[in-house]
Length: 167
Image (cartoon, rainbow, N blue to C red; front, top):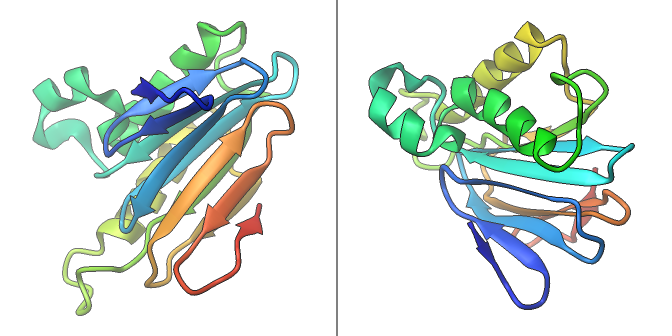
């Protein structure tokens, strides 16, 4: 995770970040089959995001410990923990959840379905905590960049060749 001078935390594949500072935002680029999981707490005005690459940490427990944001099943609890470090006092309930990504980019014959599998694994990890997404922009065949700002909790999605949109 890195903090840019302009107040934007940029997270890469498998990373996660959280902030409650006014004027800051969290951004991730080039979501293909990866999924951005975004949590927002209206009480503490905290936002967090993970750039999930794969559905299940069972393939590498070492990688899951090093980068819990890399896998759907470890990203959700890690995001809750990150929110708690910024004042959130729950275990997931009450958070606003949004999902972005999960496209079918490099697998035109649907052999692996990583994007779809990522989305389903994230929804399962949320369900276990009695959570669910209130908005999502998932699937399709185009890459996405997404950012969320602390002040208004606005989630903005950019896709090549399309106007920016908010969910």
